[in-house]
Image 1 (cartoon, helix red, strand yellow):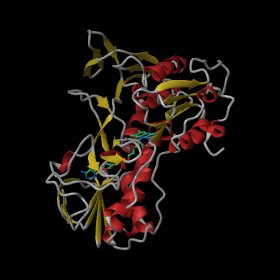
Image 2 (image 1 turned 45 degrees about the vertical axis):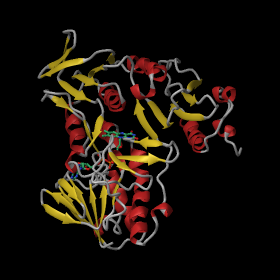
Image 3 (image 1 turned 90 degrees about the horizontal axis):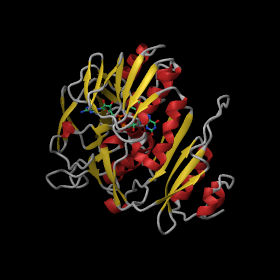
Image 4 (image 1 turned 45 degrees about the horizontal axis):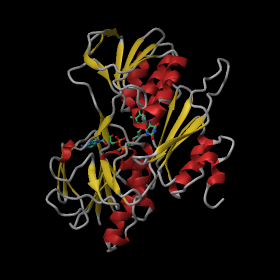
Length: 418
Ligand SMILES: Cc1cc2nc3c(=O)[nH]c(=O)nc-3n(C[C@H](O)[C@H](O)[C@H](O)COP(=O)(O)OP(=O)(O)OC[C@H]3O[C@@H](n4cnc5c(N)ncnc54)[C@H](O)[C@@H]3O)c2cc1C
């Protein structure tokens, strides 16, 4: 393999470059990125960058990686065929391709005045507007919405969060998300649930039903979509680029990514990989996947180039994980809740923070399958539970529910080998 092309200079693209070099690849690498910036980290954009604690989140790559890479920044990949990526700077031939084009925020239709938060430029521009008394309306009480509300309220803005569903943190379900409502109250943020946006105007937004909420700034945080339109119909897509467990893609024409002379892998937010662990396709738009999958993608490309059989390639098979920092709480989640899972709380999710308390009260909750397996875990201001919890999930453990429910029992004592 003489030339690997990477499309997308975010975390997943940058990490794949590093992995290729660390795993011994000395050939040519071209990294194509639509943004003008070399790879940087996004989680601080709604945290340390927005508060003004830092201006830059560039990833710490060294001499042996990005310096030996041809960077095509500010360039868009516009199409794909076997062996060639088309870009707005002309065609680029490859004999190994990594697709890491990430995801793009969903915007509400017909609303020019809305802001989104995806790039460092978005974050710095939003930070400029945040001030005492600013009437900030945030659409969406998910991860980004809650983090922006946290920072803006701390800086003295008058924050209203408009949520179409009945509770915040929708992916975690009503039983967990309902317990986040009082976090908003505590921070002085107005939370409007079951409030659907009809229209965004220049000076506020109109809810379905006719109510108008005036705003100086509007931030839309209603989720992201994989940035894959540029692929046209070239690869098979299903909530992202379909890959096998080795992260190999499939041409829509039916040829598996491994079989051509020039294999194609996909990593990070844009990929939907086959999970051996869960026997289902997974699509995860979180940092841990963009950080972890590149090692497997690089091994897949290098293994194929060395003549390894596909069956002998390593598999990407993680327990999904993400975190969010909101309203003074570290919220962490890992696993995949079974459909018929039963939720067991550990600690009191309704406990309020005392007015003078430095720390929010911590609690966790686990999703137990009918056979007693722990399938997913959320921890709120209890990071120690997540450390042991991830090990319980990786081991597909069946911890005793009564002991799990007792916050005085360390979760690590429930590990099968303890
Ligand atoms: C504000 C914010 C806060 C976050 N906080 C957390 C957090 O606390 N915890 C957590 O787990 N996750 C968090 N995330 C999610 C996490 O950052 C993402 O999952 C991760 O960045 C995905 O990395 P990626 O490289 O796959 O995609 P991206 O970071 O989206 O990078 C893809 C890159 O590809 C470029 N690109 C797209 N199309 C093309 C094309 N056709 N040609 C060339 N380049 C292209 C894009 O411009 C982009 O630069 C956060 C995300 C944001 C935006």
